[in-house]
Amino acid sequence: MWVATALLGLIAGGLVAMLLPSPPTAVAQILVIHPDDSPTDSGTLMRTDVAVLETTKTAGEALKKLNSTQPPEEFLKDYEGLGLTNNVLQLTVKGKTKDEALARAQAISDAFIAEYIGRNQAAAAAQQKALLDQRNQAQNELTPIEASIVTEEAKGRNANPAQLERLYSRRAELTSKISDYDGRAQEAGIGTPKVAAGTQIVDAPRILPRSLLKTLATDAGIGFALGLLAGLGLAAITSVVKDRPVLRREISQHLGASVIAQLPKPPRFLRRSRAVTRRRRVAATLVRAVRQEGGSVSLLDLGARQVTAALAVDMAGELAEKGPVSLVDDLPKTNLRELAGEGPIQVLDRGDAPMAAQERRIGVGSIEPGTAWTDLESLGQETILVVRTGHANTEWLHTVARQLADRRIPIIGVVVVDPDPRDHTDGTLWDGLHTALRGRAGAVPERKAPPERRTPRPVVKPVEMFPREKKSARRHPTPYKRADDNADAPTKRFSPVSPDNAEAL
Image (cartoon, rainbow, N blue to C red; front, side, top):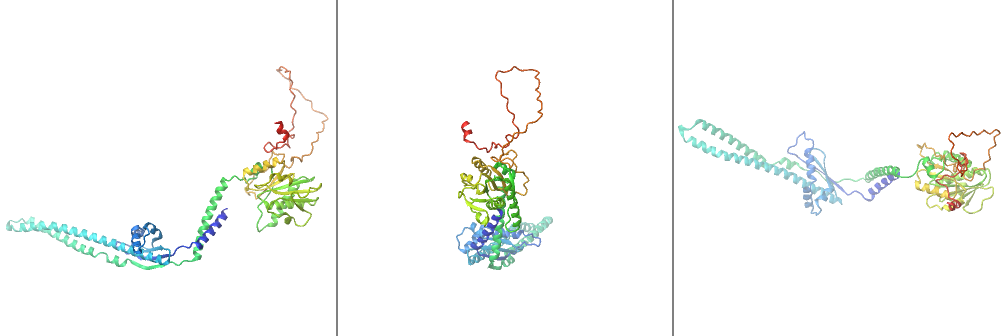
C-alpha cells in the first residue's frame, strides 16, 4: 500500500509540474542605506525593512502605480522579501505573464524606496522642528534676562555686582544653547542625503530562468515524500484496525480446521526452482492426507488463485502414478489445461462426465465472496482450503466454515499461503478430531471390540457406613463412556443439523 501511494505521489508531482507550471517570477535587489547602521547590527534593521515591505501600505502604493484594483491583502500573497545582507534586500514577485511580473517588481521597488526615503525625511523634519522649538524656548528665556541686565546697569554705582555676575553668566549660557540649536536645526533641515541618494535598485527586475527538469524533479520528489508518508500512515492505521486474521492459530480457529501445510509468498523473478520444490513437497503431503481408497477431493481458493491451481496440478501428478486422475476446473481466471499440459491428467469442467469406479478426481474452485455454495458438493466429498493470510476478514471465514458444514463437506485441513515469518503459533485444533487427519468424518473405519481379558479384575464394592433407604424406582446405571467414543463426533460449533434431529427437537 505504501509503495503504491509513494508511486502515485511521484506520478502526481510530475504531472503537476508538466500540466500546471509555476507562474513567471521576477526578482530585484534593492540597496538600503540605514542612518543608524553599525557593524555590530545583527540584521534587525533589515528585518524591519522586510516587514515594512510586506505591509498593505506598500502594497497599496504599488497597486496605485500599476492602476490595479486588486485588494492589497491578495497582492501580498504574490511577492515576498528576503534580506541577503544588512543592506541588500531581494524582492521576488509572481505574475501571470513575464511583463506583468516585471512591472509588479518595479512598482513594488519604487513604492518601497519612496516610502523609505519619505519616512527618513519625515524623521529629519520632526527632529528639526523639535530643535527649533527648543531654540525658541531658550530665546524666550533670554529676553527677560537681557532686560534685567539693562535695569541693573542703569543704577550706576548702586548696582549689585553679584547680581550682574549671575545675569551675565545665564545670558552666556542661553546664548550658547541658542547657537547650538540653530546649528543642529540647520543640519536636520538638510535631511539624510546619503540615505536618499544611496537607497536604490542595484539589480533591475529580471525574470528567473525556469528549468523544466529541475521543476519536475522537485515536484516529483515532494509528491513522492507526501505519498510515502500518507501510505505509511494509512498502512499503519489499517494494520491496527483491520479484522483480518494473519496468525495460523487464528485462521484455524475461525475456520474450524487445522493448518496442515504452509507456502511462502512465491517469488516473482528469482529462486523459482526453490518455490516449485516447496510446492511439490506440500502437494505430496496433501496426497498422503486425502483418502487412499479413491473418491474426490476439492481444493478451494481464498486469495491464492495461482498457488491453488499449481497445487492441484502437482497433486494430480502425484496421484497419476497410482491410477487415473482428472481435474475439475471451476476456478475463475486460471487455465488448468495449460498448467497440466499434455499427459495422463485429464481436465474437465464441472458436470462434464460421471466419475469412474477407480478414478481419483480433484476439484478446483473458489470460496471468494460470490461463491455458489450449492456447487461445491460437485467438486469433492472432502476439501482442502488454500488461504492467504490477511486476505479475508473474520466474518467471511466464519461464513465459509458454516457453509461447508451445512453442505456436509469435511475440511481435511488448511494450507496457509504467505505466512508471517514472525508467526510461531500452532495451527492445530486439538478439540476438532472430525477435521483432524486421524479421524475425519466419513473416513473412520469401524471399531473392533476389544479382546476379552482372561483374568478379569475383581470388583470390590464399597461398604456403606450409613445405608440409605431404598427407593421403589430403580435408576438405570449410566453406561460408561470411553474417552475415545466421541473422538470422531463433530464439534458443536460447526456441527450440521440433520432433518431427523431437527424434527425430534
